[in-house]
Image (cartoon, rainbow, N blue to C red):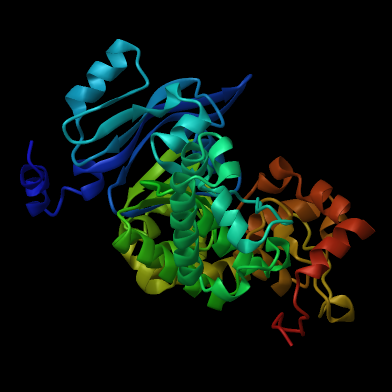
Length: 449
């Protein structure tokens, strides 16, 4: 099949590139840890030459998917297909599956069944590289040496597995020169060439993140998997990361699959977004589709998606979180939501309203969103009640829990998620210190000073 024939369906705007020419296909992936189902019947494609984001709340199973794709875990069920060359190559994949083989070359390139391959073969043969949530550089080595380590396969082969390196044979010298040139190239792309001889551990956090990406790119991957690359970066560093990923996609024929919580990064650079919640895919599409999908909004707010449609109070939270324009695109009636805000504030609620204080003590509010189930919107509403601290939540009695549950339009949720128990633990000195370390000073209105 010619490349032109493969691309013909793109004339139909409803046909997405990730379905026509996927570099990676995850089919019915299931991962169980004993009785825990971390991933349940997950299927999605990663388009060739595209940036695909895998997003979802904490605990959704995103890193588990990465570990299955890169060979760190062996999936309980499912098939993970990597393709070198254009098109779906479905006939070759079916033959490979039936034949019990790991991979084989095809007229278009090659196909690989990653669930059958150990991690080192996935990296070396299938050309899949990854980074981790926690930086894993060789801190005692120089920046340049970290990139040379990534090219050890080629260097070992050229050295006849060490002997030729000791003797300095021409084949090894040439391979070493090529490896240094490649390392210098990537150091220039990530703006670290002036730090080439510094220990990697001496780099600032953002520079270490970019160095990890450069190290992965030295393996010349066809698929680059990045696990929260923007974690801990400031806005300038996030912008530099965006530019780097766009450069990799456009200039190196490398597809990108990333996990990311920074929605600014995700929405700006992603061609395709897959959303997980409790190991199940709840949305799959481009950025415009995903950001207004009620199921996605519900997952991030921590409510059932039916509640968005059925309860005006929940709709008000969506409007507040997304803005009226985006909420309208998601099908939320902003006029109903607006009236709900007023009614929730004025109507009588069962139980007893908890006592509040006019401002946070010593001008320092606790970070209430550390309580599982309290998001930014709920934190703001609690602050409006004069609830600023963990010990206030930890002191709630049954009648106060009933009142707050009605006020937030989440009856029963406080008990299910044990906000009071969580708050009591966080109110202890160790919990408060960790919370306040990440919390700006606040005035009476809750704004930063």
